[in-house]
Image (cartoon, rainbow, N blue to C red; front, side, top):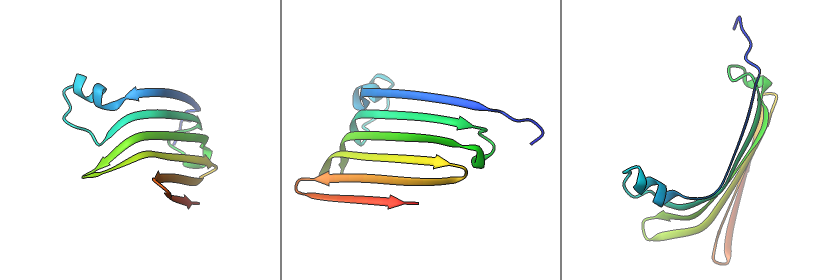
Length: 102
């Protein structure tokens, strides 16, 4: 691109009642109860992924999939210079799963 858009974006949300917010806006049932945490800290040019440096974190509670309810899912992403890594953790009772991608 002929122009460069150096950007800094920071967003933090905690304790958002997703179902209550969806009902307020007239959106039918959503599959999660609560957004416990969402953070995003990003710098770089949105048009050029190799300039991106940042992190994103999210934790959601009571995710419903049919009759199954998952108490909490946590995910995080780190990105720098066009390379990203992702981690997700889910625990259900005594069982846990963790996925990492680079």
